[in-house]
Image 1 (cartoon, rainbow, N blue to C red):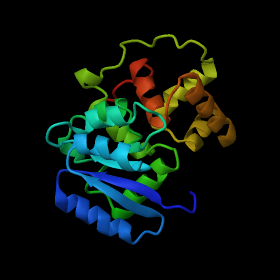
Image 2 (image 1 turned 180 degrees about the horizontal axis):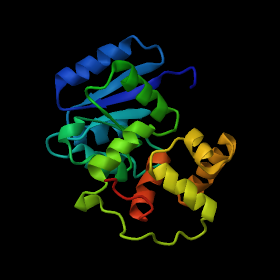
Image 3 (image 1 turned 135 degrees about the horizontal axis):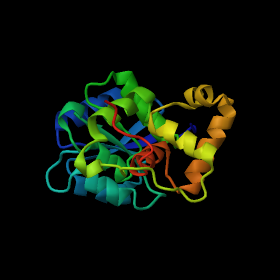
Length: 223
């Protein structure tokens, strides 16, 4: 993190949610709310106007929803990163939001510390892809028709067999430490493999590697 606070745009059609998040972040010296939006269209406009570092984005909003807003915002890789805020058990579109370019997601009933941590993780250039969250994502969304991966693994050009193994484990929600244990390599080596995969596949972050693993058929729905 730099000395400058992370500049945050809150995008949610519920004023109470925005107000609550603003109050929480007011006590955090490294976080600063610089704007609020009640619709996806407003969020896209404000990103262009004020240039926040992170957009905390709801999915269900009137007019342009959070998925389309995320797609438009992340079309420029130099712009703000998006962290989805949703009611997980009711929302069928988290996978679509991740495909649209979001760097992760959190749920509205998460502990406050987890919400703040998620924002910092995304602001630092990583993705909110904690193993437990990833596995829940797999169980809830990976088998849906709109997110169905290939039926059988497809070749990935330029990817070594070891990198393919690492990609599969990333898709299963394994952390670098767990990948190292599974493949009997060092954590530094696992991290290096992940970094090369990001470069070779043109992936924005670890979330996009998970999506690729599903779409290539490397990871299937458990059960």
